[in-house]
Figure 1 (tube, rainbow, N blue to C red):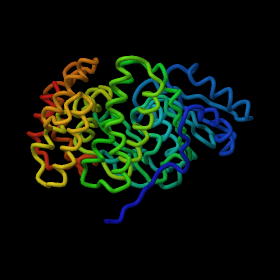
Figure 2: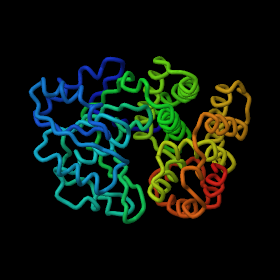
Figure 3: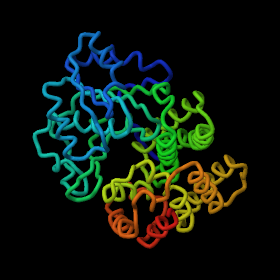
Figure 4: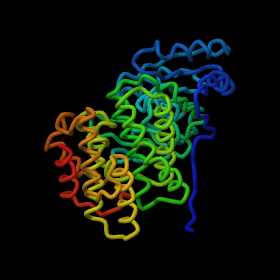
Length: 381
């Protein structure tokens, strides 16, 4: 067995009711708290009140969009003496909080630490303690060491990455996702599924990430189908688990062409990351199956096709048939095609070129050409 390493949050609390432990755990890390939350501060009031009851001084910071350099800079200013940063929300909120916690102590300009468009330097000081509490089941950002940040001047989304950015504490309470809007549930759920599929088929998979992904892929497909039919606490629990597995897997194995394309496409158009990933996943799987040469990789891609086909009552579906079944179901459930997300031929061409520089592409299971990537995007509509 080849050597491998596992890195994750210092502590993970998973399960219904675990959010009730958040305030006491945060208070142990520091009394001055920056609470990063979504657009509506009222949804974070329960945590702000609980922190205040613990004697903490709480400053709120709202995240109304996916993080970019100006938003993160505003968050750094808002931190002003904070001893700990807590992010309560979806992936955009958690990435913003993670970046703010990392950059408050930093003395270099932000661009020095950004990949692709900057110098990609490690942080020159350790981040503030960071606590992540997701309210959607999708990104797995609560257990990853990077934050994705938009760079408007370059029309790109790139990572701020450092091993010390792993959260001090991740609290994954599926009850916080109950009643999540249907469109958000679908897009974030497909993102979560993508993030267990890509590490499973990538070139850096290892026995530990395999164990997580093998169980999570079929569980996630069944759960997202159930949630498109009706609200279901058990399915919410499953999707929260799949999302957590995806974060653990991608941080310790890698991703692939779906995320290699999603970063540039999001930066060029502003389209939502989860929806882009959901639209691309079936077609990138098909592209990888066409281009794959390694028999071990082909076997993994065919196993994923089996899991997808089985979820749709077709366990013997070929890879193209399984990809088509997933694409057709996703769009019938309400997922927009790329064109409906505002992603046209010009953006697709630019993304295909830019993807080559993406860290996600380095572990893709097959060598995809620019033409292969453009075909996958064209097939995604």
